[in-house]
Image 1 (cartoon, rainbow, N blue to C red):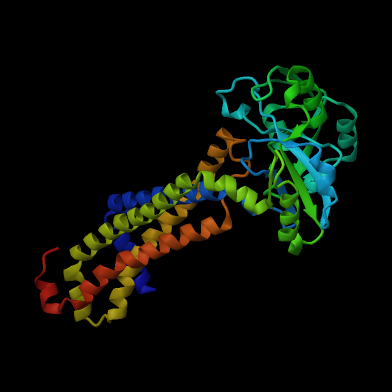
Image 2 (tube, rainbow, N blue to C red):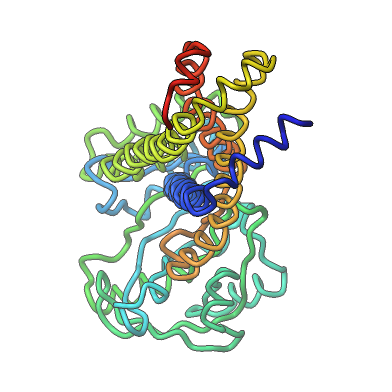
Length: 388
């Protein structure tokens, strides 16, 4: 107890220096936690992938379409339980410069899509209303709250990939089954898209973006993929069938340089935390060299000296780390509100909190290591002659 009191008094001896050190650690820990959250949010789709879901896309590139005629053929492949499809539409909603107006807009098969994605929860009433009207749409609860969409509202989109003015009627909403479900999409009828395209650009009709497959046994995924891809090996539109996880990882890998850069920066931040804290503890230990010599003289053991130096280091690191973690949540929340659809799921995860706490604790231990060793090696006579 006496050592703890000394640790506290030592930490408060230079209040401004201690405050600035705590503030520096807090900012560094907050930055570390925020960057780790960005990294995890970037790859949320990979973690949310279903174990029995596969994607069939064009073998050349995801941007190339596949014939609608493939649907029934794929459905007959042994092991395939459900087949649905979707098509990226996008377009421009209101002001394109505002990130809040950027949210995925996709054409889907209303009869099968929600069987393929059971994590999208739609009430029977909303689903019935959606299926009954050709230009109806369903919107995720997150963007519905963001934009104030209500049933019956008209969402007007100016086409870019598919030119023209497109009016969609909100007929319902979907919610996520769990926290990792994307609630930022607008879904509408693929047939409505295909009919309009037939009038505007007949050469583009009868195509979908990709197929979504549910297999009866995840162990058969490799077999299913080989069978489907072999069917269209020599066709004008070859396919690549892969697990949903592999499909999502393909998108993440496109931005691997950004993710790697964030990882490097997070490591640099750890170094900054260590340098800031080590500087303070080294200065404090040097100033108290004579005091530690006196303590040794009156009977304080090496463990007491270790406790004083390491205790002060861990106390400062702990307070700074706790403050940094407390700041991470509002910073992450503010960032998520600025880009509500760019990062559909942006939550500070438990693993991020644990890593940030470990980083702060490790910095406290390492920062105390050198001054502790130096103090223990300094003889009483040398310590008494020292000038702090």
